[in-house]
Length: 303
Image (tube, rainbow, N blue to C red; front, top):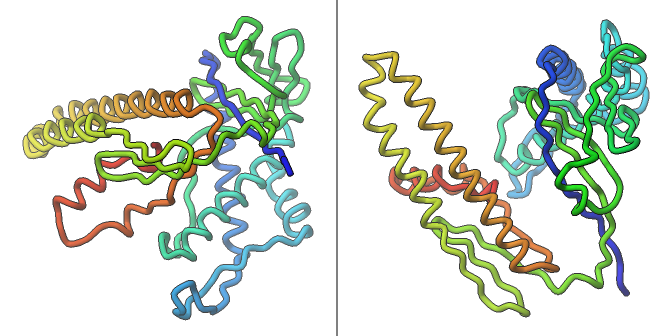
């Protein structure tokens, strides 16, 4: 029987609005929501996946806490649209649940998650889309952001309905959600992420090997450059800016390579569902310094 699944495509629009104060206010709101949920967690002694007795966190889910106590608390002093409070509660629960999954697997410590990134998830109730323009509510009947996407390059490619928006300091991310008929799927490819290669297999395609030596080399080159400067930088503080520049350049070049790689995979194996193994770097480290350095240079989370 053929089923259906949803896909989401995201596109970025650069903007020039000053939203730092709003994003910082939302970051603090989100952290407060995380703090309150964390404070209400119950710790119950259970056996984990390896049979060891551990304290397992039970996250509060009752509607009285979530929809009344927490929501009313976050609303106090909040001067922006009230729907952002609902977004913060939903996102805070997502953060806590993600932490819990990793904690149960032994990948995270019993430490409260800290919100560092400044961005806002904008629900459909917080914006309107009409005549090619997206109007985002910041303060009800007082402050709005307007984005003209009528001539955006991605409109000709976009499918489905306009979904959630993500507002950052420089970009607005626009998502489209559409349903894909499972009958269109040609097959599934399982990918194995290795140090210098990405290896996939599907009964339809056989073995696939993608060389990642160039990506590995990018990290190795900048590791060497930083190594030369680190000792000098400890004595000459002005060189720290150069170190930061190298780190930023390394991230940008690696990100660009990965973007091109994923585009190549998506186009080369169109119609396939791709599955990647879950890899935690902390579980792959050993006593070999060289091995650990190579693991730290990998981009498994992104590729």
